[in-house]
Image 1 (cartoon, rainbow, N blue to C red):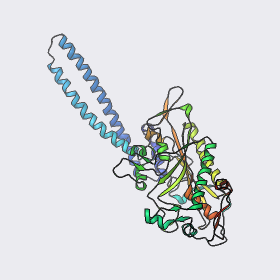
Image 2: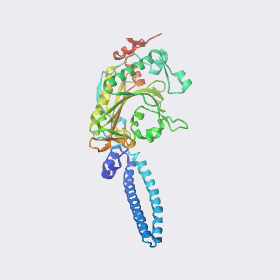
Image 3: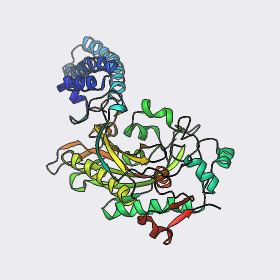
Image 4: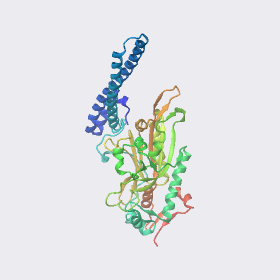
Length: 427
């Protein structure tokens, strides 16, 4: 959510940002917010003046009574003031609701380095790591391969839960746990506090961290309750400090969240319809930071570096892309994606999203910093995937698959698999 002071002082910066995004519809919202805010502040001032006048008249009535003079005219005048105040307050509430509605939906101001582009085809590749594998044999779709190898069961998962779910079996389930333990230990060593968040949060908390207009269609709502299943641990972690003030000497606060994630979205028809890459339920380690504004851009690079180190340790080739203006979404001021190499399709696929949200979430959640001199300002928030285990598993399955059907375990994970070097193989 944008700070209203930005639109009061520099509405042009918001308009320029929307033009970069190609979002003409919301340009009109800026003018509406500015005009309605002016009306809102005039009504507030008028209401304060009426209260002051009511107090003055009350004092005059008391004086007239002490002097045993007629108070009828003043009493009639005083009676009209509460009615007028009530009318003004009703208008003030309407204006505030409309202003907040628009502010909650105007996107964050992007960093100047965000590349301009209309869609994901114009995201800018920044670097590559590792040598993309070219398979020497024909690979099956990973879901089909796992089903036949007895490492996953999609058919029975569909029977009990529907499409978009899976059972991980035996060594593949152990390998997922190995990935989880490796990523956790990597982040904890770097000073991140491990967090297991609630898997359900209230709407108010959700609106702290994301634009529900963008996200609600992919979220699971608990029937009859003010609760949603979380789509990522970023959301409960990001709302932990809503309506709180954090002393600056406690920042940055660095979290590593571990959770299951729940999303209605599922892979498009084809490669992802039976598999573990894009599903309704998956597990993820998420990085989240509350920071001082002056530190957030350095920390944004740190989050990316942490995720890169994990994928390098797993020996998975990848590339880093900077997300363009037309693909960045509402909340982030700048976003990187890491895309892992998937040999069967010969393409890079997104496995990490890394965002600096600047003050956008903190304004929504009223999360502030108390400076040593007593001044208060909104915190910056940042988030990044460390690793989504199902996506990493697919990358491992394709990049480490042998012709005989065995999957070589990356060396970094063998310790967590009791030294085992391979899983699977022909039966």
